[in-house]
Image (tube, rainbow, N blue to C red; front, side, top):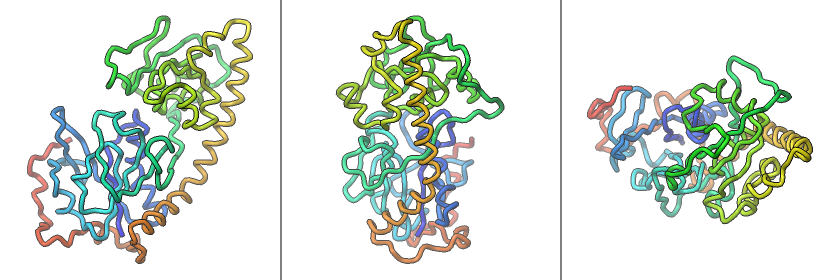
Length: 332
């Protein structure tokens, strides 16, 4: 049995993209055959895939069946794709966000295995899989106990449904592209008091907490209200946040007390993320077992030593090993 993970190109700005991008390597690390297929999209909405990470060719409804064997393959992809590209495969759809939160609106089909990052991202998920996605310094180290004189606004993915959102007064706007470098992003958070966020489905909230910036939830869409979001978020994350009405109660008289409580809650989050990281490989093995049970694929998996020659070879009589890999190629 082989796993094909359909992932966007590596993008350290996007936690969800990185979770998918790294998943194939992580499955191989725990002893399973896995391969990454990169997926990208042009401005018109047309998809392209790459099997080698270099050359891309157009994705059509039968592309995956031409290259991989549906009988012995489980395809794992994000929540925002249409099922039509994978109808003959066993599919595990990984809900790293709610359907509709991103540009592409995914269309599932019956019979998919539902992996979810949060219980609220899809009704009745078959498996919850989280990992520690906190961005870490590359060349510098930062202290928590330092003066903080900056407040930030983060709109994030909310610009998709509400284009007019922007920087709140007396703040800088943190965007999905600025700061450009990881160390600069972390440095900014380490100098920040409050991050006012319109996007409650973003890893920026956890990043901010870890680097000592307190999140203020400005808007809770797609949730009904702040407490509805809190029922779905990690409790240790929710305990570090406040909404606008609670923020308005903070003054010079209680600011120190607020941040004392914030840092106590932050420590609980750190401990929880450490536990998630330690258990991640065990959870991956559990995930594979449950997918195999779900799809009734309980034959012995191909040994990892054979993966270079056996992974995903299609039995489709129309499959051509020299399949026009250079047709419509986009070189990166």
